[in-house]
Amino acid sequence: MIVVGQSIAAQTYYYRYTKSIIKGEVNTNVSGGQFITFDGKKCYESDRRGNNVGNGSLAYDAEVSRSTELETYWGSCYWSKNAHMKFNADRSLMNIETNAGKIYVYKRSTAPSGATNCSLIRKSENSGGSSVGGGGYVADYPVQPVGQQSGSGTSTSTKQERKTDTCNPDRKEKVRRTCAACNGKGTYEKNGSGWGTPKYKKRCSVCGFEYWNSTTHLHISCPTCHGKGYVEYWL
Image 1 (cartoon, rainbow, N blue to C red):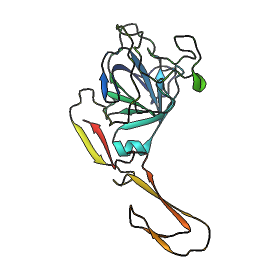
Image 2 (cartoon, rainbow, N blue to C red):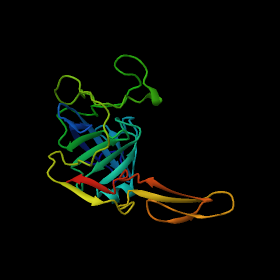
Image 3 (cartoon, helix red, strand yellow):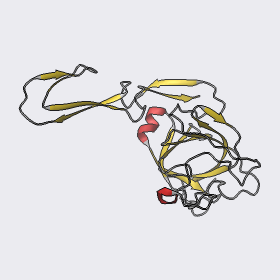
Image 4 (cartoon, rainbow, N blue to C red):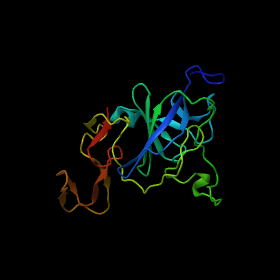
């Protein structure tokens, strides 16, 4: 929907929180949802009218979007200061992936009657009253959202090793594709100048590249596929 005060291209949708994936463990005991507003090359968590609720803003990430074939935005949201929001082609499904590798899965739906705001809005203090570090960000762990839908209890879990894209809550089929960023190598090569007079050549045990001992030659893990050489997502 387009509301007064937004740019002509801006659109606001409601996304229902369906599950979290932490260290390979799927938790569906969740509730609530977020309004997400798309405005040009950015998106953010908003109220029903498209006003930013103060959780931050995310910018379109062209590189990750190309490598995953998912519309991807990077920046700050409720779950993390460094998160990716990933959407499928029609924006009906949304994954939020934090820099700790945690995944929160949402599905676009009709907002509950009377819902005017996100059920998760960042606060400066946690429920125990002690301050949260990092400029007032809520601790990065799954919680039982409150507000839009019924539910009880609190869900917590340990940190997750980065898994794969799971933008389909029904987990129909996993697709694996070669990482476009590193062409499947899993690493980037970095060369640089050293010091001293070249005396002999060395050969890289990884790629076979020959270089003088006075220079540097390193292989750095690809930040897109995290060294795997491929990316995965759900169709």
